[in-house]
Image (cartoon, rainbow, N blue to C red; front, side):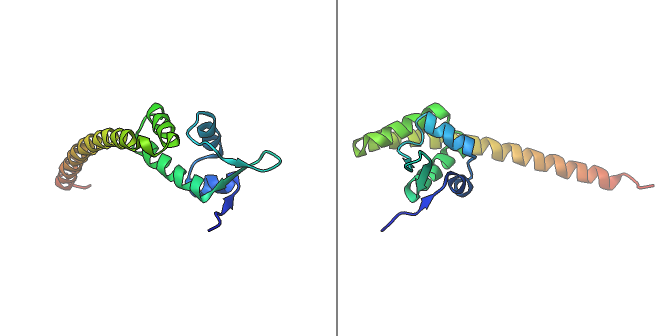
Amino acid sequence: MVSERYSPSEAARRSGFSLDTLRYYEKIGLLAGVNRTAGGRRVFTDGDLGWLDVLRCLRDTGMPIAEMCRYAELAREGEHTAGRRRELLQQHAERVEEQMSLLRRQYDHLRDKIRYYEGVADAVPTR
């Protein structure tokens, strides 16, 4: 199976990352091994886009860049690091779960306040 090839702008569009972010991720080692044309222009593959999906998930769930870099480094080292990668992701998942719990409590508090103000607004006579 031949992998599709994408320009940097198409990779940015498909991944939801900006071109600047793609360049930054490559510079710090989060995005390694991106192919280049003879002219030096980056060419992304389906595999690169899959990896960007992983990075999107980690970033969107609040994983610090340093941990993302550690995860990427372990992934490049090979399958013998699978246990360490799983452990890193498990720790992150626990932090995400704690954050989700906090957000749920705060959301419930907001909804209670909204209901309170709806009641106040309904009780105030209109002119």
